[in-house]
Length: 442
Image 1: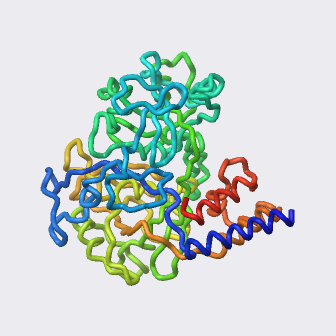
Image 2: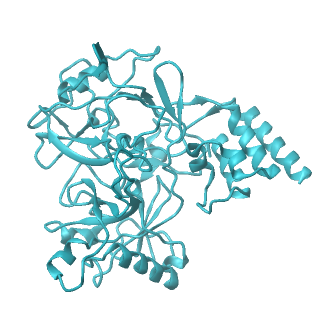
Image 3: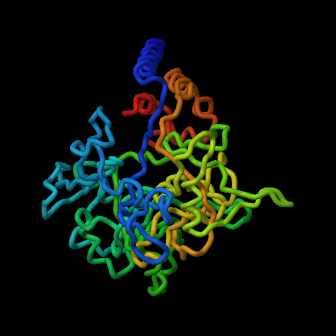
């Protein structure tokens, strides 16, 4: 044990010496795919800085949708487009890459998140299952070792949300790589997630029977009971069935927020820096948080100068989803934040009609759309940013190899979500490796 501790300590010191004591994003938030700008009713030319409606989704990275660098490329230059590749890749039954123009494939790899997604067949593309049946279906995939693997699972709600293409609709997903969904465009395209809705802390009502699902036709997120009625009531039974799309790979989207003590909060996983609380006025009962329409929300964030930073923007819908803590409710938000707990505007337009914008309801983490003239809360974001290395990260790694108990290592639940890599409830060598990779920006 002493030798292991010495080796790990040396590794940490070596990493810190090379990388200068800063941390980059562990899990970058995927682009939404929206490349067109809009006013309150129609598409427009993307406005210049300072113009009306500037700061919306498509004002950022409009020339680089769904593109990224090779994960193994140590030279990360965001302006070198020649080193970029498509976000998704087609795979055969053995998991080998296929040409982009392949007409038959079994799986799709997301090159940004590292996740591999099941592709439906002509026999099962329209299958709808209860949540319990979905678990059985995934079990069959693992028994059959699809792609040579037996670690398939239901995706989390965030993982499903992040494959949505907000630049299209019906279906709101890449038709090139997920062509099996095209035939469902005119019907419900609700997909089960593995994320269970938390109970309301203000009531005694048990809501653990509700599971989040994602609508891959339009892009909404909501929850629904997975407890099926009796088989005899076939009309109601159909309502309790959803589509399934299995996934495999590590879930990296687990929030770890740090309050910077200056009105800002940094997510050490995504690298995003958030405004701690929405804009407010002081009233007789304390802070009264402002409600703004979509246009005003864009302008507020673009003009914000907070804690020495002036590069804030209204978050796109994926950035908002990444902020949600689905292990909490009312608000579904880390305790580092404060402020209004209901609906927050995103900078992303609903492309089906252009008159609506997407927002997240932080009562539970659902996602919907509303008229751009209605008012919601607003919270600005910037980044991703590099953050100073927290010495506690190094201490945690040393505690892991020293054999400390989980409670002694973690202390706070939020830290455990990052370092418990394989969700086995144990802290071991995999967590040490993960932490070293995190510190090394790998």
